Image (cartoon, rainbow, N blue to C red; front, side, top):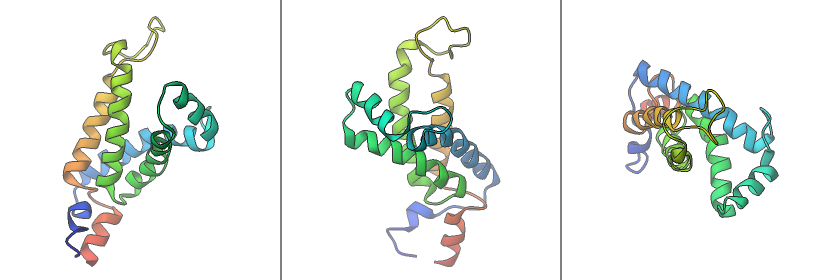
Length: 149
């Protein structure tokens, strides 16, 4: 296996990581599709770029968010370069955690706050951190490729 590729794809057939990877990908997938295609009542690319521009996020970073959530979620579900997909989304959702931190810990269950809390992001970041550390796990492209190289 090429020395540069090994740390990125090396994983074992861990079913717990498979479960966490698929769950993380499934959680992130709708966010990406909202931004990319406008699915799930999302704004699509133009709306996302406009929204992030209003928040003073540079267009290059906005595109990284769109691509990271869209293709990163699919990469997580399939286990393709899972560590890279998890790390990219870890950065994206750390930003979301920072943005939502003034709204406290709890989600906005009763509609009395201006925004959502951070408990959801903390949980998602924990899932992504496990994938960054352990790799993609069982039934992943990474596991198949590492066996072939």
